[in-house]
Image (cartoon, rainbow, N blue to C red; front, side, top):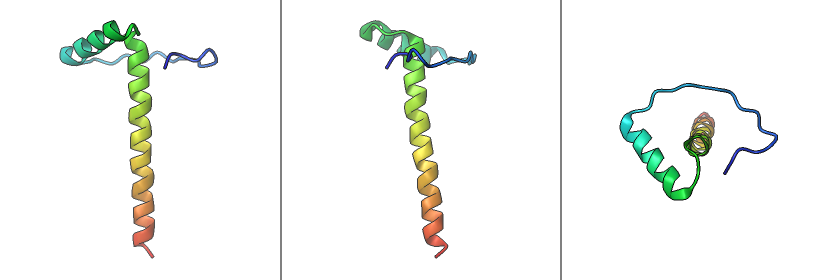
Length: 66
């Protein structure tokens, strides 16, 4: 999933362990995508998963309060 034309981007700098950077580089090379695109997609998927977990936790707590 590449950057959408209407999507504005914000620069964030993070330090990655060399091992993670190497894995990203290898996948980027094989797939013909940029590391930036891969990182954005991985963050989207990870955030969605975390949001789902938080929502489920709230739902579980609400049911337990009954």
